[in-house]
Length: 543
Figure 1 (cartoon, rainbow, N blue to C red):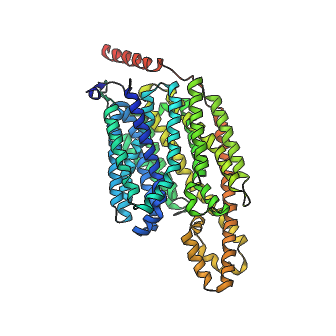
Figure 2: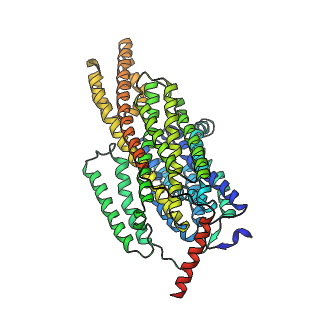
Figure 3: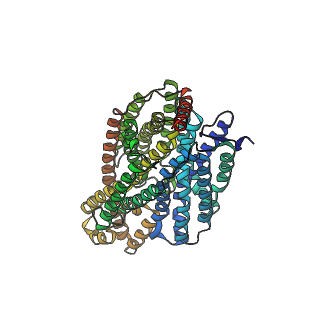
């Protein structure tokens, strides 16, 4: 059978490439949708499994497992092919989904989500690399744009689907729904992706992989807990950050001596690579800061009810989808990207400026327009970053550079969440103390340390209202005063967030001017790689 043929590269040719593309888009769709579907179902899951104090770990376990494995998958797939790691990731993700659906305690669910995360690490890194296996750099632009648009579409569909499944079937089906998609993807990968045989013996850098994991875990934990469980300057946080940093320094020293390093330090000498990584962190912080906290503003300040909160980000994701598609088409037709990067960065700044003009009187129509603008900018720039890195390196290194970039982008989100969360909580507390009426000062101690976002849930508000209702009409008026103080303080906090987001947006825009431009390569790309590999093989034989 054709799919049993063994190749020396990951390149996919002929009619098979369209089936491989369909498999990539399917994988991107259901793996991206999983996060939003699960987020929608979490209140029901917590109520069923009684584990509110472990709530954050449902996402933390998944994020940590996926983040630390992304660079490892990328390097190994360059040597042994995408197929075995794609299949492994899909199987692990499927097992994790099935076990998550069977969970009877929060501990079981967290462990199952870690399994899912190990699979998700492959599913995050393999699709982008597989696009590179199918198309030349100049062709990739439009298809990378389509793939990122699929990500945006899944973010829109996910909340509605998650709510419908939870209400109609059971929260367990938000995990079971992954299984048919995973089975289809496994079949697609088995048929369309080639078996790859390494041309020469390769020594896997297992020690480097282990050092990297040991260094990343405490740093990821530090960012996850910072500003919530522990203060940023607490001994625990300092220990996690310093300890992780020391181990990562050891990782760099090891990689400089390793014969076949997991992540060659020489990669960072490439200006395109290093600039794109910095831009990736800045864009990730701008994007995730908006994604995480804009719904808080819309629900708490604009007054959109919690039932509709799943649709809050739809305008931004629609802008994201349009930006991805247009950006990809322009790159494929022109073969250029720098002017597009600068324009996209300018649009992100414009969107951030519009965000900073929002206050307690802003209408939902204005908010939606502002979200479309910033979505257009981010959607145009994100696929461009993938293209730039792929174009700057030899084809045989694509998995490594792709996965490194993907890891850094996800790290931007990990860093953004606690930083923005701390800013929101600090500003909220300051304003709340100033605006709370004297008659309600005794309630300040009861609300001390409470996450302001938690006060917006209908359950929390009903519980507070019930306490005030014991005092009759006077109690009801006091409750209204309290909630007004909460909302005005929340507005103040979110405005601080948008100001910080503007700083990251401006830095992203400035960074685009430092991005070197190399014309996107066409059909000669793979041919030059074959010639290079052949010459290297002859050199080894002559030695």
